[in-house]
Image 1 (tube, rainbow, N blue to C red):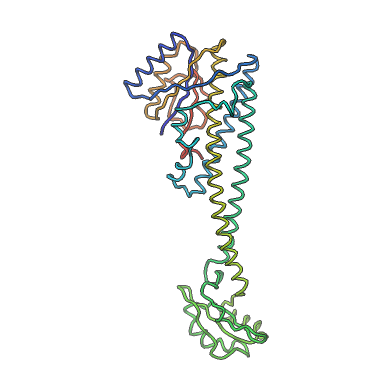
Image 2 (cartoon, rainbow, N blue to C red; image 1 turned 135 degrees about the vertical axis):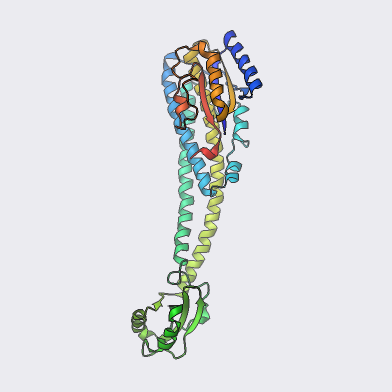
Length: 379
């Protein structure tokens, strides 16, 4: 799995030399790849307010990542966990996530750099909230369509005692008149002989030799029998005593249910298309907002750590879990002079820790934010 680390250090001779040394080391050892991460000049504002902005951005980061995870989980669910389909739709601005991050360009039209940092944070917060609301609305619409179809399918499927009979019963199989009616009876295979020998005696006015087997499976068969309407209650009672199941059946009602199921099936397919398009668009917008948010956090933390005038350099390291521990040690060694009192160093850090969000809470002598691009791990 690819790990992306967004790093910031001061833009001075010592740090620049350390960055060059880092580039040389990782190129030689293949620990990672390195590229510049461009962040525009942003409006610092009142320095005292930066701590509050930093706290707000941290909370917004957690919220945004949560929306990304919800969106990814919806993608997995609606696409039946199909990895290729999820990856095909989890794009940012039409490109794969790693390409978007490594080639990041600030969207000045959407997030004007002349605005205060707190205003930019508010813009992102409003955008994420709207996308989260839309996600909930579209998820509910799709789930309702899916649930309605499943409920009706459940009614029309199952064993001979519950399933729809219109898949094999034709209207001409039924005798329906003012005085006569046709009942459909479920008989187990072991009771066929008993049925044939007794059905005419289950009530007084059963039409002789009217029993016809319309359908059969491993459970048994469905028999049609014709009798006078006034004898239906007695026939049902005596049939039940002999464990013959008389189905409550109406051809027209079941036909309506089948038509309704066809409509619901079409509606579900339509909702599926709408939902997938929504997920694809929402994911792209949320992820793009998230990377802008990461850039904002780097800027704010750089000002708080390294002071004014604004003077820092941001770069992106792309590595994996196997190499991350060695890379962390290398970073700690190169930049320890920035803060020798850093409480978490490479020697103490267990990179195998799987606790979500822990990396952003750890303190290093340099600024570091991790960016996850593996959508299959989001849940």
